[in-house]
Amino acid sequence: MKKLEQIPLDGDLPSPKGVALAILDLCRREDATFTDLAQLAQTDPALAGRLLRQANSAAMGGGRPVASVLEAIRRLGLGTVRNLALGFSLVDQHQNGPCQGFDYQSFWSHSLLMAIAVQQFGTTMNLGSGEELFACGLLAQVGRLGLATVYPAAYGRLLQDTDAHSPLVEREREHLHTDHNELTAALLTAWGIPSALVEPIYHHEAPEASGFLAGSRPQQLASVFHFARCIADLGLAPESEYGNRSAALLLLGGKLGLDADALDHAINELMPRWREWGNLLKVPAAALPTFAQMSAADARRPELSGTPTALRVLLVDDDATSRCIVESVLRDVLGHTVISAGTGAEALAVAVDAQPHIVITDWMMPGMSGLELTHALRATEWGQTMYLIMLTGLDAEDEIAEAFEAGVDDFLTKPVNVRTLRARLRAAGHYVQLLEAWERDRAQLKQFAAELAISNRRLEHTAMTDLLTGLPNRRAGTDALAKAWPAASRSQQPLSVLVLDIDYFKRINDTHGHAVGDKVLVAVAQELQRAARKNDAVCRWGGEEFLMICENTDLKAALLAADRLRRTVESMKIDAGGSPIRTSISIGVASREASMIDADSLVNAADRALYRAKESGRNRSCIIVQGQLRCLP
Ligand SMILES: Nc1nc2c(ncn2[C@@H]2O[C@H](COP(=O)(O)OP(=O)(O)OP(=O)(O)O)[C@@H](O)[C@H]2O)c(=O)[nH]1
Image (tube, rainbow, N blue to C red; front, side, top):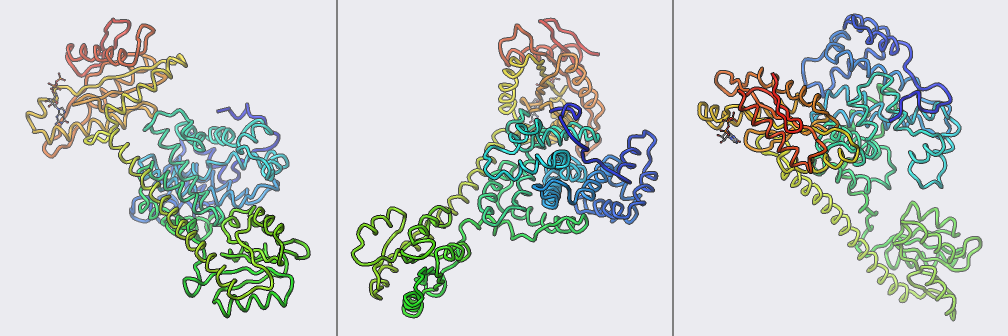
């Protein structure tokens, strides 16, 4: 990620103004109080209303509703108020702008839906305060607005280049020497958003390439931002994309442990909030079908009307008399629904809307011939499955061969005979029914594939998770080490591990029983997880033993972390039903050394240090450096 000053920019970047700017300044002061902030916020009634709305949102846990701005600010916290004021100020200022190809309204509509989705799924996954996530979701794409603001002409051209096939970030880098993710990260950093949030946002478009440790908080955050982004993409997508986009969301949801019902429920809950917030911020928010309806969209095709054999037929003929005759046979004798067109061009336009099952077209027509119409229809995705019948003159063998080559399915000679027409349409009807059955099967298969991905994800999660504590288990820890070791060798970055073991745990079991022992184990595990730095991975290594993997961490920093964890556990009062239980842990710490051949040798070294910590009285941390052991305190 580049710093703002390293990014080549031409003009002024988006920045907060007015009350929002004053709030940002105030929050920088150490002596800022809630009252100062409330007084300032009240000078902007729209902001005050929006803060009240957010403080009273469902995500606040259903507490007593707040009625005053001061109370709202207390509930939200300084940092969140600051970030919300920043976001709202940008929305207000940039409802439109100078970049022709940039749709400012859609941009905010998309950002708003993303904000609401990040808030909803991020809070469910315990990834932080919902309001902070909301503000970050609103700004997660702000680099795009930045590029539209500083390079209105060049960025507009780039966005409108419909022939370009490479991803937008690549084209941005090629033409503007930076990309929207880089600019987003630089702006968020300049506005004081912590790097623990900026980095996952930077990687949210391709979280799998982020290099974050699987299961770590940054990786979970990047995934949840990515997921929210895809929901926002679906919210603004044309109807024709509902099927594919919702199938992709089902797969992503599966990776986050959501099945189709849970996803349907959650997304349907988001939509009214999108519209409420849209009203408040004056940003468009569409009324969408339910997620289940969107998922089924791909399989949907207009129902056959009337009897099961009734088909929608598009009849194309420039000769009005002959068209009328065939039309009345099709409709009155054979019972089909008929749409007619007098030219190829008209037929094309009608076909887009009417999506006929069958097209019967005359060959010779002024303007677009039947053959050209066939080519044009077959070139579209929706035209490929239509059943095409060409009307030809008698003795036209060469023409018929040419028509088949162009993609027609059948031909009829003029003048049209009713018996032949009926027989040909029966065959066409059979084809349509088979096609529809195939489309239903395909939709079902897609659903099965999504469900399977969800089950696989669940199985994978179960196989990698310790049932009692919910921490990653030994297998997950071994996998994480197997990735961290070569990464450290390649980058020559330090790598440390801590082996942590609860002291006299057997005594707890013996004195209070196994069930209480379990509660102590869970409490310690949760506390270790909570107190660990965000990039460190904690797993249950076995029994009452835990392993912590600290990438990019040298021995000194690892020892400091170890001692902080040790003191945290020492100060715990664990509520297991009776009087609070106190416990402690001993920790062995080791860092990767040139003489170590693999990750096992690193863990073995930390084990030796742990053994020394136990030996020298427990509740302490020991390190090992080139075979030499030393303990704290
Ligand atoms: N309740 C409970 N006990 C467990 C679990 N896994 C291992 N244990 C118990 O943890 C105890 C570990 O005992 P020891 O290895 O003697 O170690 P300790 O009593 O902690 O003593 P030191 O490690 O030397 O401080 C054994 O009694 C195990 O049965 C578990 O999942 N739940």
